[in-house]
Length: 79
Image (cartoon, rainbow, N blue to C red; front, side, top):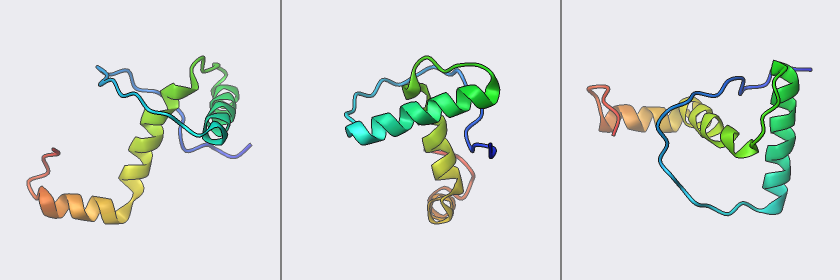
């Protein structure tokens, strides 16, 4: 199996969001959670726990977003 982009979950103080996902996205998220669990040897009970690391990874690797963020916050502060 190829190395997945998401491999660990960080436990931080959460901000609660409520959202609806299309059923197909939820099925894919559950399948991804199963693959991560197999890769790490530790099942993920709630596939929703993958949403944060997936979004984090996506935003960190979106070059246009990173570039625009640097222009908006040249001091390096996020916000």
